[in-house]
Image 1: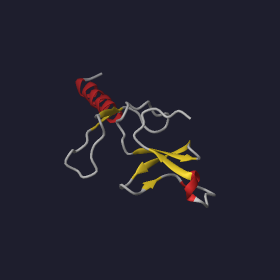
Image 2 (image 1 turned 45 degrees about the vertical axis):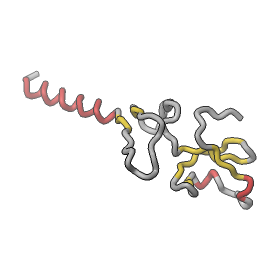
Image 3 (image 1 turned 180 degrees about the vertical axis):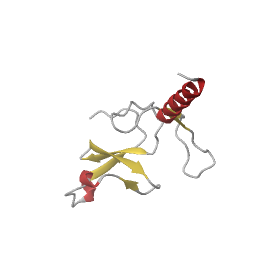
Image 4 (image 1 turned 90 degrees about the vertical axis):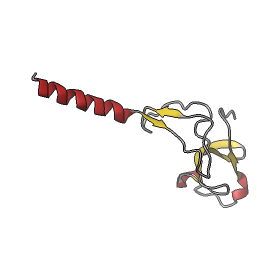
Length: 107
């Protein structure tokens, strides 16, 4: 392999490695606040990875009758978003609840 080809392979591998992990850094000056600690994300959603405790403070547990059914994301102090299938068929929203600020959920 020539020096030029070796250099090209090196930079391609470096690019692949740098894309595979991202350090999440929160800007503490923004209004919504930051999680308790920063974290490094090394995988994509498919397959996922375990999150460090308290790093994703805007993640919620959507619950029916105090039992976790889906995850949700906090949008504002009053609104959250979740997948449509999580609330499909719900007519009376009083059966829904939200768990917040938990590291481990035990039913």
